[in-house]
Image 1 (cartoon, rainbow, N blue to C red):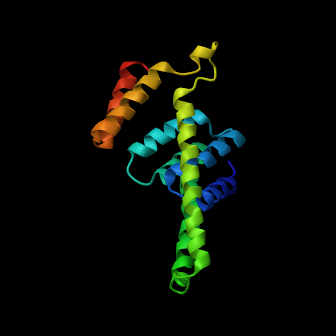
Image 2: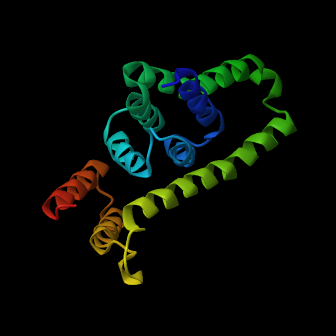
Image 3: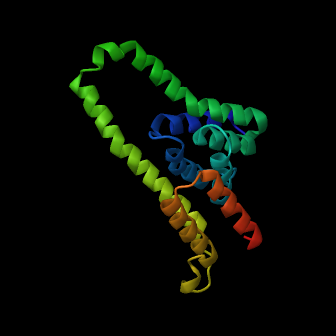
Length: 183
């Protein structure tokens, strides 16, 4: 494993994944296309674990990916690579923020970052839906949609919107249903 490559890939991800942990997913999908140490299925599993575990989703995903690619050292380097751009940018921004807080260019830059962030999160959402609900190995057109998973998704989506319970309840319900149905 080339640790410098692992660090650089996650540094790029941290630099351009504006909007939080889910915004890193498009970059992880791109890594899965380029490298054999990551697959779409692994990303899906990592996401389930990262959302259930304490801490930032992006860092949890980077740590898991790094661990698979290069053990404990890979986990540390991937996490460090992901957070390094934010640390650098925050330090630089803090040094010059007082002088630019009323600057129209900077206000425009931050206004432009909002839709970019929304786009990255939307792309991540569609990527996760594709992994969870789409069966690319289906023999017939009517088997492309994973019906059991879709029914679980629809029921939990409705319950979340209607009852607004704690997310842990829905995560546990999804896990229990998956176990009961043998998914």
